Image 1 (tube, rainbow, N blue to C red):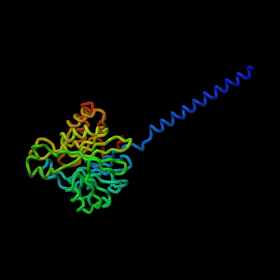
Image 2: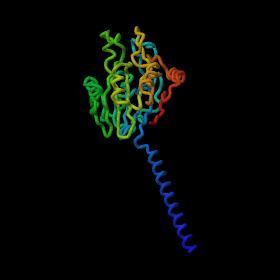
Image 3: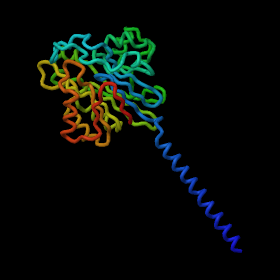
Image 4: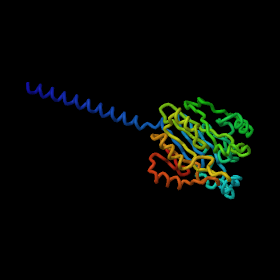
Length: 299
């Protein structure tokens, strides 16, 4: 009788042990699933506003500025125009930058976002997404065969791309016809994919209602800001954002990860990466990144 009781207790203990093993296995499986990086967004900063963004099943090259250091003259009519561009080299060669790219996004065709080197080096059959028919005509004229105007819900693989507005300077600047023509239009783009963070590439713009509307509509978890505060001669304000706009973005989107770029690479930028790092530290801003050239951020 005692022997049977002992056997029953042993069987019970074995069952409890088996349940524990199953629970441990399930927990390990859950942890493994939690570490799954298939939906991860990666952002590799290359130089200026040039970046490779992997989201969903696609990799995009943003605003390629691929010329060698100092190959171009400084922008006329801007501050420090005596300095040649780009001011800094690329962190790697163009062949490595192009590797794995599924499509190009050109927010506008200013030389520091779509330069002569990019036009020559990039494969002509890669899809190129642009802001309007005018830019599409320019880029088709450069030999690119698959140029697409971005809309509000443009599908590419499992990625949805949405064009956002912007203003590449102040109202005062656009009131001068010749300068307005020089500034032109520039877009931003929102990138979304299943189970991935929503990415908002703000583009060359000042802070205005276009930016606020995009934030309210899309609620991005990752925001990429051009914050070099580039300046033209004769105007006090910048034609793109600066440090104060990063503080404004942190207030507007307290949970978002913020990536600050478009610094150190062109003659008319007046905010450096060190300036931005100092600002972030001084104001104790969390979740703000100031990447080095070649650095990869994962979200």
